Length: 408
Image (cartoon, rainbow, N blue to C red; front, side, top):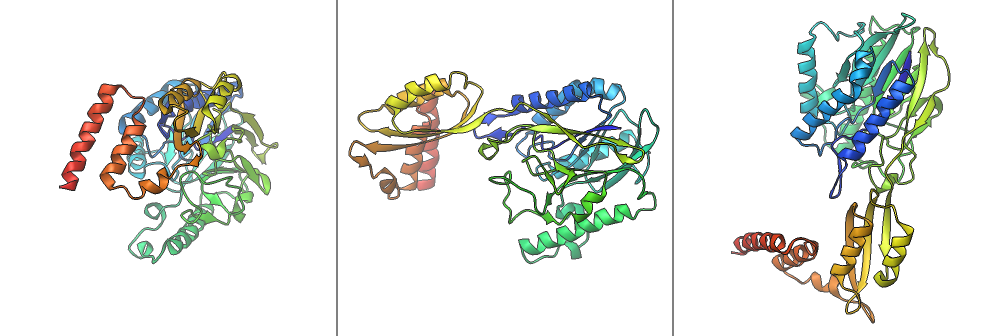
């Protein structure tokens, strides 16, 4: 059985003002190409399928895109196994699981062999089997979603905790207990091939510059010593690709660079094979192209902007954070922003600071003494500097009216 491991798709996500839908859909399409070219039997997505920023209509369109991209894969007998991550909306995913169960009410009991050619989503710890299409032998799949109180701390006693640290400790224990319960299930065969899919932070992993929209204090970190006992542990949650101690215990990483902290990551997916006696060879990483993400610092617009035009001739699709310094009386901010917008049209964040000919001005210090209304008006005036004048005036008029209501 040939299995492709991927994770952290974050479909429908944004980076600052930039909608990442097209970037992420292209990455999903590349995953589908790998499935076809590698004759994959099972596509295992280890959590965070959707972004928490995705709107309901965006989720609908995302699922429609899946149908189009993976129609041939599913029709040919391929199977997609997915599980929920910390960024997946629990209510939406539970509703989706319930709807799928209504469609096939006899499918999904623990340890049962499920039919191929379908997508399966695990919103709770799940144990199922798939039969290899050519060899006829079963492979066990254990699917462990991200540990949250709603998933793992059932009952009133489980929801009582005095601090975030206490809650995380309870979740670590509950996650390990749930995994142990599956492996002790009467239908679980210790000698049969078994693959784990889990969305979790394992102790000892390299998170890179930062976790994606979550701090280490907020995260649930499991020990993970039992993971190496599986023929393969397909992990999601940490976006930096890596293996942990054993080459078959892996984070595949995200399918795209999601923010500046991932600017140096090489994205990819992992392919491995499982036979009747377990994993047959070392996992192989297949690369995925990724969008460049970087920061550009402008210290002297008159000198830097002409240089950027030469250094970044093909930056129209790059995701760029702009840090701008300009000199009052020498540089026109509106012109500087317009020139940078032409070179880096997909800037996702920008910040500028005015400096005088004799050194930094006291703008920052002076701003601290401004009233709330004046600060908001100044901010909007600068942020809307490149917008259509009529649109800018209309927005400022609305903001002015709201501020006057608050002041009164």
